[in-house]
Image: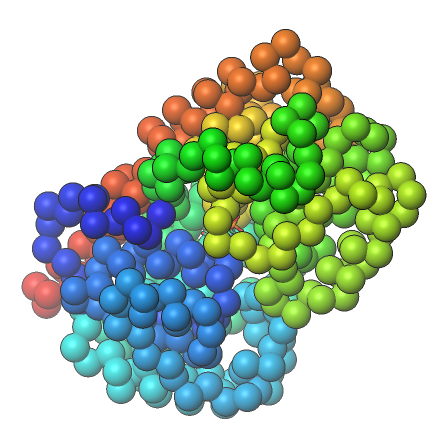
Length: 401
Ligand code: UDP
Ligand code: GLC
């Protein structure tokens, strides 16, 4: 993770990047941007539409962050990525003008979210430097309205120099929605193994003690924000049939899905679950918490674009169960580096949990194979090399014109 980026060698000159993100919460898109922003902090800046914990995290590691003046119409939108109404266009125009004004000394603009991209694309149209859209969402009707998709795709095709996608699945959905295939560059996220390797057995024991669980009690961990499509309810359903298994639910509602969080907590008070579901809220000690678990479960009901949590579970050397859809299929080979089960099927999930618990090695081989796969395929070095390569494709031709 971020603390270890200084150990990543960067044998290339830095581009001057203006990173733009609409959110200032700590979602996976922001935690992934943190890694990039740290690597480019000597030459670059981050612009956010809102103030919040992401700004604090960036500043704490010496990244130059500026908060734009976002009209309330834009901040009031509750969806994580999209734009819900036409009313926000004047607000986006205002953001575009601010981005344009601040982009003068940069080689390119990197837009880390859909809202940021729409504003950056308008800024490009006004004469700002080249724009790269880092698309981290699967552009389907489940997450984005038709207007949203059509607008973003039209702007991508006309204004974006490249569209970086976080998995093949994200790229395929972009093309299926009308995006130009020649703009797409796959750059998988990278996650450092180091914070996972620094976790001590005392820290793990402390978590187990706090939860009052002995070392033989199976504990399944969920580490996603609380949101219907992250599917924590599927895990709760699965555990109803596994009375010996406990669950650790880590994360909170980040994008206004508090009703879902309340429903989840209520459903966990039923007699068949009561006392077995441990609610930890948002935490910053994910490596320790994962290592305190027997299994890491990632239960999205919709195709997951990438799923940092899956790679983190592998780095924690725990068997990971994820859903057979989207980018997760690029992170796990079923039965080799983890388990994949059909989405939305609590029975299949319960069976996979039970299979691991009952197996002679308790999932040790799956966990080890997952760990080696994650270290080899999803390192920060690979991320930064690929990212630099994509930026070079954009910046160097632009410099020659
Ligand atoms: N995370 C965290 N604290 C929490 C819950 C989650 O730091 O309490 C982190 C988690 O470790 C992961 C990220 O949030 O790095 C979630 O990213 P992912 O790509 O899995 O999903 P997203 O929320 O972006 O869709
Ligand atoms: C988005 C996606 C998630 C991905 C993250 C980082 O938040 O939902 O799957 O891991 O971006 O790219």
